[in-house]
Image 1 (tube, rainbow, N blue to C red):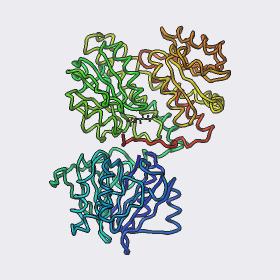
Image 2 (cartoon, rainbow, N blue to C red):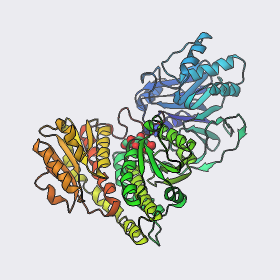
Image 3 (cartoon, helix red, strand yellow):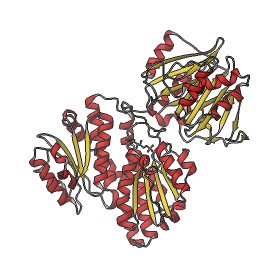
Image 4 (tube, rainbow, N blue to C red):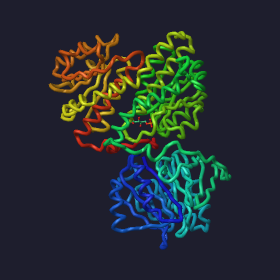
Length: 607
Ligand code: F6R
């Protein structure tokens, strides 16, 4: 989604604004721009497409100054062209905006009636005109900014330059995150601390409804009533080095390889090394006493929730309802009186998940966030937080955050089962012990990469690809399909293996690749029958199984990816790895931009 950087300094800011934008590329965008205050007033440069295009515009027509704002835009209202790119400017005002202004149409009509002429199709441009409108009413810069923000409905993070010689950044947050950074003789604004990591780690997170006036040596923050407030300065947990690709070609490749360490780190936070028992801390009573659990998320995180449903229900005997966040709060859900809702999210900023969390809070549910970003909006508002310690995930396709989510959810299911007396201590310990070798099992799964690379050309040539599985491997089949389609743009579908003959089997043609996730478990025999049905109709079977299951596929599959034996609940975590690798190598084969696939954003901060 859109990214914002702002710098006010005693030295030129252009190069660092562009550097900040490059760090925001991972969020997904389709145009970029910057504006600075220089001797002649506010000047700006914008370009569609990648930041490289903006850099060449800046090379052709350089601008610089000591105060500026910059933006990467992920188009919502209006095509991703130069005209619609931010910053939007009118007179002595330039703004950048992340989010959606829901009342932009009436505001635009009102401003047009007072003579304002609009140059773009965006919702955001109205903010610049509103500020100018208030300046024209003789308001000072800060009052004009605050009065304008007051008129906005919807979700936004806004940064503005107001006045043609004003060394000040104006910022406001409502629904989209914004961070103020403290440098040495300079100050920063960013959509996230990651954008500011090369400049400073000392940051202050604006809270909902906050506005800020940022000068070279000070910041004044006001809350949503306009009262000045102190917000705590913190050390951001991300360092600039954490976000480098190192020896890898892509962030996704690096993040796939980081999974053994990410899982070891995450598990260490949830397993008591002495007793080898789950450690659920503040989440324990919320899981133990709930009549029902509700697990809500989007995309890959939703699929982690879907795997967890099998675990919580089978081990802990607690009913779990899973919901896609964008559907949940619009279907008038019947919620339990004494329920706990889990919100699973890498970013902790996904607009739909955040809104669903607030809905549940209003309905009186306890809330737990399973989150990778500790300083995120969801982390600040849930009753309890269970962190996934995967480290920053930059590749758009979620990999290590997904497996870390699964690890936290699996251990939570075991802990909940023990608290609810569905497992005794010995049984719980046996389940936990199964995780002891998980990092090594994941390492062995990563070692299938050469085989995945040899399968990739077959997938790259396919008209469409199917993924099937049963039980916990059904949501995993959905995840395999999601991963493949988002970075290769190939049509891919995931199905419950037993469901194919109820319709989708009609799509199977001679040579259609069907990826079967079937490690040896009580359901494997059933899945094999479904494989026979596919093979009889010409499907090319690619099996993902374990050593015990491999013989079953010898005569049936064109390729068999053999994983180590995966005890207890570890199976879906290990089996996720070849799915990631198959998607990665297929994308490589097709030459797509796999860290920044088209149309996608890392953190989806609009509904
Ligand atoms: C897919 C992917 C997305 C995210 C989804 C939720 O690889 O990354 O489907 O899982 O947008 O994002 P978070 O987890 O940040 O809430």
